[in-house]
Image (tube, rainbow, N blue to C red; front, side):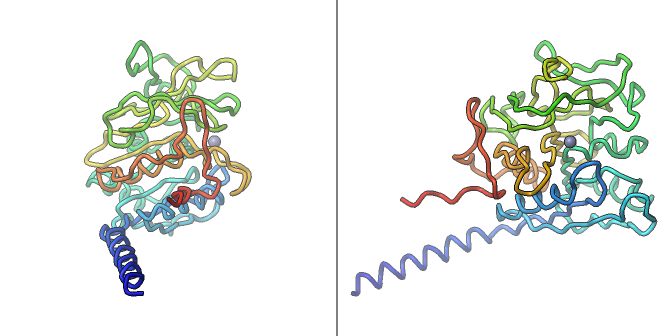
Length: 309
Ligand code: ZN
């Protein structure tokens, strides 16, 4: 009996210790800005919120803008309380106050995630385009900056004229690492298969890319550019830490959302978000990360429970 009691106390103590070590680091305070998008923002922001919160590393507030065409003048955003701002917004202009505050937040060293169609937004807002590095659609052309793509072993900036932003039909594709040293992708496979998604191509912008993390080949057979396109990178802007992921086209529902249910999308988002919030990545490489031959999914937007030994 005594032995059983000791074992039990030991287990309780270990569990407590574990809980304490988990809570030792305060979660990163995160704001998702959403409410207008040419995408299913009602699902995407919820998926992002749950991916971040299920990791235990983030607490997330969601700010929903007025609907498209409504009065935006009262949409004053306070970014200062946050370690991380995730932009899941593609819509009407923010009021000048929010624009200025966002620029200040970034320049002072804020953490930012630019997610998928957020890089379509605000074509005329110069500083925002510098925060994204590359953008597309909404009338973007050579005036927005060069095309940028991987060519001959380096990131090439191409000033030739033409529209910015397109994609072929959705398909599964291979992600190719271009910077193994960066904490966001250090330890991840050099090549991994991504679930069915859009593959943004012919993006243009200031192209102030700091670390190019992953590219993917946009095949003309799927209606693409025939170029190796930059899909995930960090951006050089003041003291900001900016993680830009072009992946994650939102599906029709929370349950049917393969691009965001892809483990590769979720893990790179989590790592990019932690790096943007803190400059470090403490997460281990999870066992369920995809390989070059297997796409893996987290259908409920969290890491599967560890197998009991
Ligand atoms: Zn999309």
